[in-house]
Amino acid sequence: QEQLDPASLRVEEFDAFESADAKPHGVTVTGRRCATLSDALAALIEGSAFASYQPSGAWRDVVKSINASDAPAVGLLLIEPWDDCQTARELWQFVESITRKNVRIAWSDQVGQKTGESPAQVIPVLNLRLGCVRVSDAGATTLDLTRRLGGIGYEGLLLIDPPVGEDRFGTARAIAEVIRDVLVPRKPVKPVAAKR
View (spheres, rainbow, N blue to C red):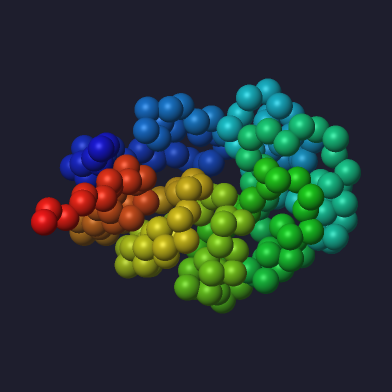
């Protein structure tokens, strides 16, 4: 069974989420943030594991353009909330209207702050329609959010901005322990027959 040692984690800072290479469980995952839907679909076809894109305009028009695409459904197309589609309910309606199987929502706690929704309200609504969750306010909120994601069997991307403040290393260690205990996949335990 793979164990995640919180003390071995490195914190890397990025100026912006433009592209990312990560190695979860020893596998390289590459993704890209794109300006248009066609750029995002092209990135997926070229081999990116995920591509994120923030639409503009009426959400029903965005649904039509995504559904009209004849590009193969490869990789994970992450849709970032935008002015016409921000609340959990709006995002849920949006994703439910998409016919492509590889579309998920990229949600962040900053969107939640803007709409007045907490992870406790968003995660049950969007559930497995989430493909990426970003936390900018590391701390108790992150611990609660991570536990909630574990409760729904979340297997998407989890981006946590490095904690700040005097206890930033203690906070980072606590977050790493929750991730290890809640989100890192475990091998199933084989049942043992009772001896008579």
